[in-house]
Amino acid sequence: MVELTETGIDGLDGILGGGIVRDSTTLISGNPGAGKSVFGLQYIYSGVESFEEDGIYLSFEENAEDLRQAAESIGFENWQEHVESGAIRVFDKRELLRENDFSSSLEIILDDLQDSRYERLVLDSLTMFQLFFEDERERRTYLLKLTDILRENGLTTVMTNEQGTVFPETDIGLENFLTDGNIFLLQTPTESGVNRYVWVAKMRKQDIDTDIFPMELAQGGIQVHQNASAFSMLGEGESPI
Ligand SMILES: Nc1ncnc2c1ncn2[C@@H]1O[C@H](COP(=O)(O)OP(=O)(O)OP(=O)(O)O)[C@@H](O)[C@H]1O
Ligand SMILES: [Mg+2]
Image (cartoon, rainbow, N blue to C red; front, side, top):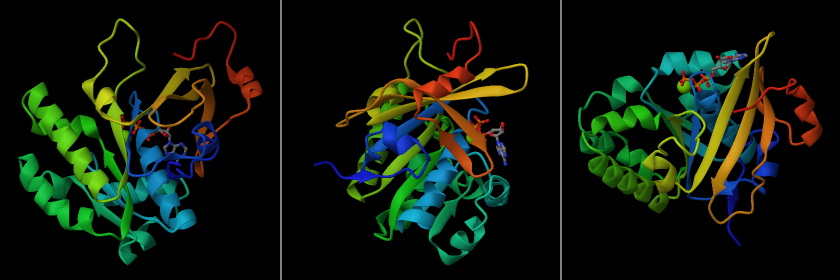
């Protein structure tokens, strides 16, 4: 039996067959504004609020104050309290980008990665993290090294990735193969706003539902509608991809 970690994202854990595999790394891909960062915040926040699992949030994109505002604006009102108590350990871009090579950056976070207090980790985003490296080979080596370190330290990890939905004719990023799970967040513009969808494309060791499900991103965070009838949200002649 594989052990699972519930994401705490409403409706998603059912699609995943219970959650994501413990100690694995899952990639959350999507275009700008698709909800990747909210996904990461929600995963860490609900870990603390609902599952007694403390988490580490690494952001190469924002500073700690921006993260606090983003979390509070979406309704994760105890975010800062958890940061202050140490239940959520934030490393923001100021800390992570102080060094200009991966090994030195890793030194900064290593103590906390090895601290058995933490069970969840978010890296937002892998796209920025990869800027540390000059070529694909180096990138691949370090991504594998990092995912090994995370696994060895019992961290169930979510990494965000700036990438649209994969079409057969498009290059599939190497990171999709190197991670245990792939979830895509999709959005299509409508007259009144945007329709959002989630697609779990891969989850090693798990029997997943690979349909595309509608989701909402609003106060309280992301909510996935598992009921296929919610597909009526999709307008005539409109494609979710
Ligand atoms: N408090 C909120 N209430 C309602 N919707 C929100 C709220 N906060 C964010 N959103 C929605 O979520 C979207 C951004 O989500 P998020 O920052 O997670 O995107 P992202 O995929 O991380 O984008 P990027 O690639 O630019 O980092 C916003 O464009 C907005 O539509
Ligand atoms: Mg983001």
